[in-house]
Amino acid sequence: MRFENFTYKGNSLHCEKVDLHLISNLIGTPFYVYSKKSMIDRFKSFQKAFQDIPHRIYYAVKANSNINVIKLFTSLGAGLDVNSGGELFRAIKAGANPNDILFTGVGKTEEEILSGLDKNIFLFKVESFQELELLNYLAKKRNKIANIAIRVNPDVDPKTHPYITTGLYESKFGIAQELAIDAFKLAKSLSNLRILGIDMHIGSQITDVSAFKEAIVIMNDLILQLRSIGIEIEHFDVGGGLGVQYNDEPVPDVFDYANTIKEELKKSKCKIIFEPGRYLTADAGALITRALYTKNNRDKNFLIVDAAVNDLMRPALYNSYHHILPLNENDRNKIVYDIVGPACETGDFFARSREIKETKPGELIAIMSTGAYGFCMSSNYNSRRRVAEIMVDEDKFYVIRQRESFEDLIRNEKIIDQLFEK
Ligand code: LLP
Image (cartoon, rainbow, N blue to C red):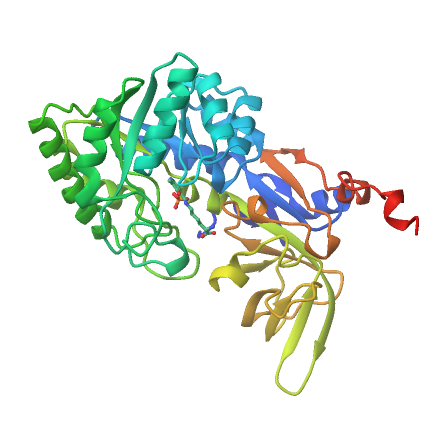
């Protein structure tokens, strides 16, 4: 079965052992639901695939940043890869040990760097010469030595969506490989930095794993060059990026990924760091939404549901495909629908010209593989309240984030009387 932890029992779609109708009856729709087991299984498969090389998984918090998800991965032994002061805050709130945290980001602010230094995080991944100087200056001010890795852009095409390609020179990320040696030399000359590693992250939703290998070969060469000039590199961070199957495209699993890159990784003689996000969480999640209306014009049948583009941006942003499953399995005829939300945007769609079983107002559907880059990319556009998040653990479920209230929407606003005095 494509979704091991989302299966029909009777006619009703369950997450693990919980009937999704039950959750909707209790908390309403829309909501995201995550299978704890799915996240654990993926984490363990990842570990198993690389068990014979020294490595550690740092979960990329940006993929799903609910503090319970973060805590689940740290409880399994993961470190964390954070990309902002906000993600660092979440990591600490989730009880993470600062010494297990990597700080990524092409544009860290002074405030963010200082908060990382003050919390004594494990390492900063530096992406420019200027950031090296600033980090050194701030570390000196705090009387600390900051551990660093330098993110290198190997200029390799990961053959994924252009918006999530990060390892080509046209993208803003990392330091160009030709300049990498100079960046390491500068880092070595700065008194309050300690070089620990080298880093890459070439993109996301990568399904051609040969791109990883190509980049690793380039990075291995850099590691050799660095060692030859007396710069020791302890760890090699290969980033995240392993894709998942959204439709029926062929997708490597983590063991194919491991088989393709492991020999090259061994040559680096480094401890390997991985930063998976999507692989660990995407298939664990679904967005459950209720059909409100159906209508048709000359060209189309529309199924209008109560979730919208603000709740799941991926289709609008990347034209991404997500399977749609009915919560009630039935033998009705199939109809070709555009499945759309209530927001005032033509880009507010979850599927276009998709053939699914006829769906009637009031019935529920699940938008699958939305556990990564789903809720965490949602917004309040159209003053829509962000939806609830649920974690299922076998036959129990927990609200891990409540649906927002209308008051939440204006919490940081107030009427300024002076504006209306004259
Ligand atoms: N490490 C770094 C430095 C990253 O920038 C990312 C993701 C990851 C790790 C995790 O990559 P993953 O294993 O999840 O592919 N919003 C887009 C994805 C953006 C990915 C950004 N960086 C989407 O919905 O497809």
